[in-house]
Image (tube, rainbow, N blue to C red; front, side):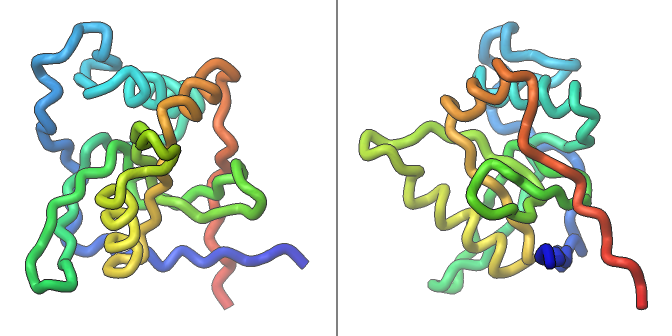
Length: 157
């Protein structure tokens, strides 16, 4: 029997308004659908999500409480407007609510800060953001598809 996925994301207090992340002074080649993206990978991902009719809001801010009592601002690149999707790009499907485009370190991993941001958002709001490298984005962009499927809500009992 296939695993049932339950979306338990907490969206209270989240405004789906894009914030300026300083991409204004970048190249005009990074503009897609009137929005200025920070990197080529982000622009490609925006184009791909739009082509696949996956609604999203870019650069939605989340304040994350840290273990030391302070807070940190995390602004994922793409949040799927309170919807969850199943990502089939790994061995097992993963329920996700958005994507963060990131370069990898020289060791071939994501930065500690990126990993911590994703972990803290999941811990505090049960919102999962998938980290995708620029090379992964390029691969999916060239194939013109993403291994994503809308996660249908479970029927009410």
